[in-house]
Amino acid sequence: RNDIARIGAPTASGSVLHRNVGSSYRRGIEMDGRWQLTPRLAVGGNAAWSTNRIKSFTDSSRGTPVLRRQVEPVLTPRFVSAHRFEINATSMLSVLLEGRYQSRAYLDNTSSADRVLPDFYTMDASAKASWSRVAVTVRGVNLGDTQKYGSGSVSSSGRVRYFVLPARAVYATLDVSF
Image (cartoon, rainbow, N blue to C red; front, top):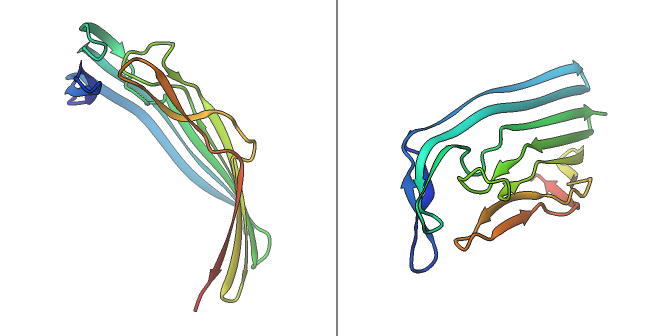
């Protein structure tokens, strides 16, 4: 209810006006947990499943009004999840492995098969070494160099645009306490 979406008529500058779609719903379940397997090893994760619909609305975003029914809202995946493995190898060294999955989502409020953000999975890892007042962290992101899209949109002319996930990268951080 009272879901604001880009469904209005295009303006002279090409932007699409936002309007209230009226009746809509977002229902689902979310779980989150962490389990300390041993004093040095823990696993955890979360997951969310949802069903999301705009029951009906008049879409004027492409110029000619079209009545749309039972469409999925823009950028609303049905399933997202993350997992992590935490290893405290010693009192001075810890290692973390994390993964994230997102199911496909639509790039606009039409549920059109040609306007889809594909599903993706990424894996990150980090290691932290600490001594007294100094800590060094090395973090690797997108370790599999997944060449997928993290988000996207549809331009007012109807062109599909994607935002590519960042490429594999490694960062180092030095933390000194005074």
